Image (cartoon, rainbow, N blue to C red):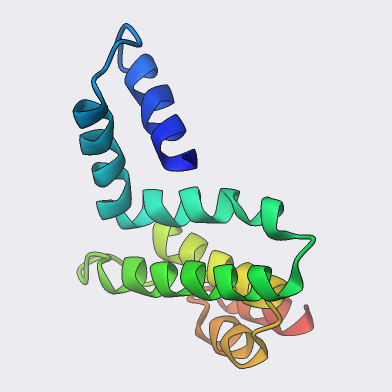
Length: 125
């Protein structure tokens, strides 16, 4: 439901009149899920709704963490590892891991941060 709502919002922003067919909305929603950075953002935005259920939050954080890892593996190998996109993804990996109490993953994300100063900040957290 959240995904279809976001697809409707995206269609409206693109100039759609709000009368998109379910098939068109599903096409947009599928595109949202294929775009790794957008999928990470979409999933991360939904974590607040899970805050009251620790078990569900941990599971959802695991899903987000997997999406972050997939997005990191899809980054352009010619980009600098400290490029803003990669640095932001590592930051998200750390945040989500801490939130889901996934301590090993949090440590790995903190140590893998491409910017030295972020590594120290991540370890301090």
